Structure formats: structure tokens, C-alpha cells
Image (cartoon, rainbow, N blue to C red; front, side, top):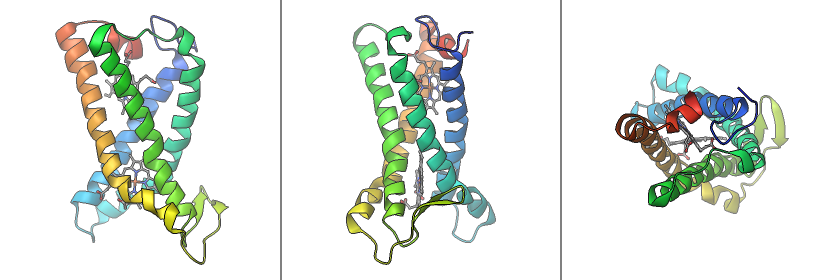
Length: 179
Ligand code: HEM
Ligand code: HEM
């Protein structure tokens, strides 16, 4: 299996990033779902919530890496499918990429402008502020909503890969990433 993508298959690096991040996103959505659904004084909710910020920041760094790798591999990537469905798939992937960047970015921006500051793995990048910066907080108002839209897109993405491509069309789309 080549490290880089080829027109027939995604390469090892793209696959590790895709499937590794899929597993991490599952954990991230689980923490968000528990935060939304379980009562405030709940041990399971607390445990799942304890990693939400750190894992979210990790996913932010990983998606930048993955985006850069994807761009560097564009000339050799598996081609998009023809027609309207192919264009919709490209638009869907771009929307997922955009939200994978924006959703954590708005929360990290809010942290950097808050009285808690921005730290990651014990390293302080922005010290806590005396006064919160209002414009840095504003976009984070939509963090949860955009996170749920991302979750819906991912559900649609999985359904397209497994139900449409694998079970109905029986084409090689799933194998390009998994086979
Ligand atoms: C790709 C990464 C992320 C995803 C998919 C995500 C998803 C979500 C979702 C769906 C919610 C709503 C939960 C609810 O309805 O109760 C939420 C809330 C929250 N998230 Fe994230 N999150 C991510 C990254 C981050 C990061 C990096 C931070 C902090 C630095 C963070 C901090 C918070 C906080 C404080 C809340 C509760 C307040 C609010 O809804 O804005 N998240 N997240
Ligand atoms: C069981 C879960 C999943 C399955 C079966 C799956 C399947 C696939 C397949 C087959 C492709 C290749 C599509 C093609 O060649 O046109 C793909 C690409 C892609 N997937 Fe998934 N996927 C899953 C989870 C996820 C998750 C959780 C995310 C993001 C949060 C995601 C984001 C993407 C993106 C952005 C692409 C475009 C190619 C790339 O840049 O890597 N997938 N997926």
C-alpha cells in the first residue's frame, strides 16, 4: 500500500487520518451527546465531558494536517464520480472539511479571549484575560449548533458510503478508503 494517494485508492497516510479521526470524532460526538442529554450532576456526563476540549483541539490540529496532505495529493487522488451525484459528493466533503475546521476554531478563539485563557496539554498559549473580549466570544454562540450539523453530515456521509455505494450501487467507493 503506497503512502501517498493513487487514482485507484487512498494511500496509507490518508487512511490512517480518515479512520483515526473517524474514531476520535465518534468519541467527541459521544461527549457532546452526553453533555446535551444527561442531567448536570451525572458521573458519566462528567467523565465524557472531561476530554471534550482537549480532544476537540487535537481534532483541530489533525484536520489541518489532513487538509494539507489532501491538498498535496490532489493531482493523484481518486477521481470524483461523474454527474450531479459526484458534484454533490465533492460539495459534501468540502462542507465536512469546513465544519471540521470552524467548529473547534470558534471555541478555541473564545477560550483565547476569555478569563480562562487558551492552554493545550499543559502549555499556556494565551494567558487568562482580566476582561473577556466580546468579538472573540460571539462566533462560539454557534459552536454547538454547527457541531450538530457536522454530526448530521457525517451520518449522511456514512449512509452514502455504506448503503448507497456498497449495498445499492455495489461500486468500489468504500474500497478506495477501506479495501
Ligand atoms: C471538532 C471538534 C468539536 C466538536 C465536533 C464539538 C461538538 C460540540 C457539540 C455538538 C456541542 C453541543 C453540546 C450540547 O448541546 O450540550 C459542544 C459544546 C461545547 N463544546 Fe465542543 N466540539 C468540538 C471542539 C471543542 C473545543 C476545541 C472546545 C474548547 C476549547 C469545545 C468546548 C465546548 C463547550 C465549552 C461546549 C458547551 C457550550 C457550547 O455549546 O458552546 N468544543 N461541542
Ligand atoms: C463508518 C464511518 C465512515 C465511513 C464508512 C466512511 C467512508 C468514506 C469513504 C468510502 C470515503 C471515500 C469517498 C470517495 O472516494 O469519494 C470517505 C471520504 C471522506 N470521509 Fe469518510 N467515512 C466514515 C467516517 C467519516 C467521518 C467521521 C468523517 C469526518 C468527521 C469523514 C470525512 C470524510 C471526508 C472529508 C472524506 C473526503 C476524502 C478525504 O479528504 O479524506 N468520514 N469516507
